[in-house]
Image (cartoon, rainbow, N blue to C red; front, side):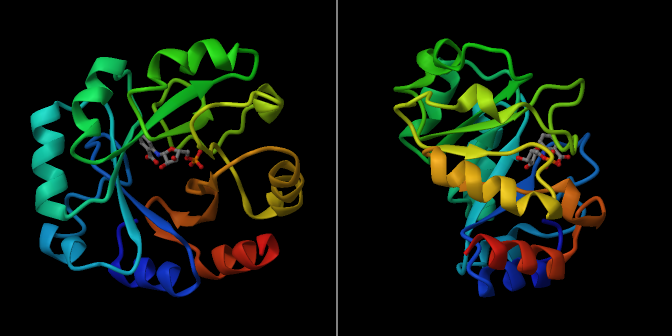
Length: 199
Ligand SMILES: O=C(O)c1ccccc1N[C@@H]1O[C@H](COP(=O)(O)O)[C@@H](O)[C@H]1O
């Protein structure tokens, strides 16, 4: 998110989390768009900071300045790195998958080090690719930690998502680039329609 008004609109429709990207190479980098005090003042939704291979010190500083509730570690962070943040903030570790991995094996080293997992699509970029992976890799995986499903989920995926939610133990659905006019500018009406379809 890069617009406070859009954040408030999401909160009003019952969306639980809003993501702010603190990765300068992203076209959705929030730094130049919203101030720390703007974001800190938002209390109507849980605020997630998205980081890629950032230092612990910088992350802690940003959590404090921006009043973040959660961090989404979207790079190559180790279990020890995640653990060092876990007592300070809710930690979500991202796993970028193609769809043919042994997910249990992938996540096992992180089970005690984080609060949530998130599965996104493996690509050259770290995230925001708009591409999906084969969700069947998560089927019957009985993970010990709740997880977010992400990666290229779009307005036409509501039926497929509903089926997935009915069958699998997914905690939350994470949407991003497929609901945008341009990077960082969300199509709120499309999100509203999508949320209604899932309710
Ligand atoms: O969106 C970005 O630019 C981005 C850059 C670096 C790391 C993560 C990023 N976004 C996250 O990627 C996933 C999937 O997004 P999409 O639906 O495929 O566009 C999501 O968690 C975003 O927060």
